[in-house]
Image 1: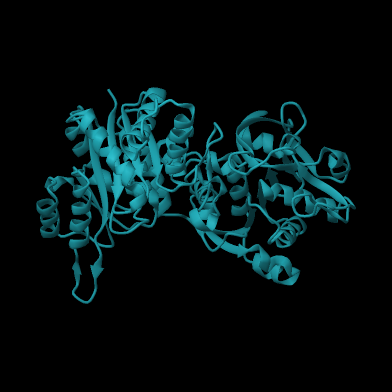
Image 2 (image 1 turned 60 degrees about the vertical axis):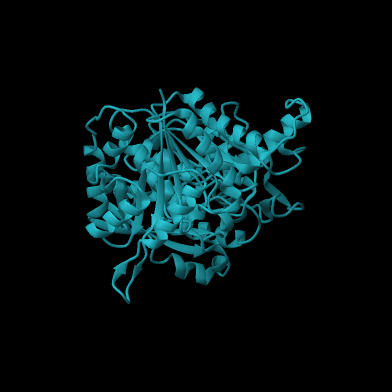
Length: 533
C-alpha cells in the first residue's frame, strides 16, 4: 500500500521545500523503496509554460511533454526517476477540469463548489499518480506558503486525504524558518510556532518539522519547538545552509529523518546504500581544479531561469573533479564585439541556452562567432543551436541576410523557420513541440562518439527549426548536421568537428543530466574546457 508524505512550508517562501522533498526521495530510494514526487502549485496558470522565467524560473519539460515547475528537475536529479504530467498539478489545471466537467453536466445539476468538487479533483490527482506508478512512497509538495489564500483548497484536500488514508498511511512535514538575530545572538522559534499554529487552524497537525537555519539549533530550542508544535523531539530536523544542494540528503540522514518517517508510517527499517552519493559529495567538496564557464543569455538576473543548465554543467565538472564557476553574461552586452571579446577572454567554455524573442540575439551571435573563431569550447541549446546556424550562415556560408523568421518575418534568408505543424497553431499554452523525440546521430560524428550510440531520445521545447532549404548550402560550407530526426526532416544537432568542442542541439540535454551521471554533451564540453586550464 502506498504511503503518503505531504510537504508544506511556512514563514517565508523559497525555503527549499523542493530540495527537502527531493532529498527525502533520495533517502527512501537508497533503501530500495519506489518513490514518486508530485508538486502542487497554487497559481491559476494551467502550467508554467507561458510564464516569464523572471517570474517563475525555468520551465522543466518531461518525456511526455509536460511543461512543469523547476522542482521536478530536482526530483528527477535526486531520485533518478523520469516524471511526467501526473507529477505537476496547478490550481489552473484543477479548476479547468472541474469547469469542463460542469459544462458537460457531469455533476448532474449540483452547485459546483470548492468543497467538495475542487478538493475532490485535487485528491483525484493524488490517487491518479498512485494508480499510474503504484509507488511505495508518494511525496507531495505544496507550493507557496501556509496562510496564502490560493493554497487553501490544497491544504483542505490534504486534510481530507490524511483522514481518509488513516493513521500510519500519511504524514505531514512542515518546513519553517528559524531566523538568527545577531543583536541578541539567538535563533528565534516563534515564527515556526506561529506557522505551525496557522497549519493547525486548517486542521493539519504536522508530524515532522524541518527547520531552515544558518547555524546549529541548540538542544533547548529543539525541545521548545517539539513542545509547542506537538512533534517528537527526534522529529525536529535541522536543515542548515550548505555549499551544495547534494549535501542535503546526507545531512538529513545523519539526523535519521528517513528512519523517523518509516517508524511513523509503520514500515520496516532498511539500511540505506549511500556510498556512491557520499563519494559524489566528497568530489563536490574537494575539487582539484576550477573552470569558468560563461552562460550568455537574456534571463541572467535570475539564475533559476537556467537551473538545469547550471546543474548539468556542475555534474560534468564533478566527473572531472572540477568546480564549475558560472560567469553570467547578459547577451545584450555582447552586441558590441569588443565588449564581447572582453567578457569571454577569461572563460574556458561558452553555453548559449534556450529562450524566446529577439532581445539579445545579436549578442548571442557575436558570442558564438567568438567561440568559433577562437576555438572556445561551445555548447548551444535549442535557441543556442538556431543562433549557431544563423551565425555560420551569415559569416561563413555567405548568406549575409540570414536570420530566423521568429525575429524577422521578412528575412532575406530565413535559415530558421516555423515548424510545419506549427503553422496553423493558435494560442501559446502547451502548443510547442514538447517532450521526448528520437534522433539519429551521424556515425563517427563528435555527438555520436559522445553518446556512444547512434539512436538517442531527448526532450524538446520549441516552435522553430532549421529551414531544410538551406541545409545543403550551410553544410557545404562546413557546418556538419550530425543529428537528424528519424525521418530526416528535422535538424537536431550541428557541430564543427575540427574544433575542440563546438556542438549545438535543438533539444534540451540539460533535462536528463544526473549528478552522478552527467549528460554526454555537457561532459564533452567540460572535458574540452578542462584541457584549457
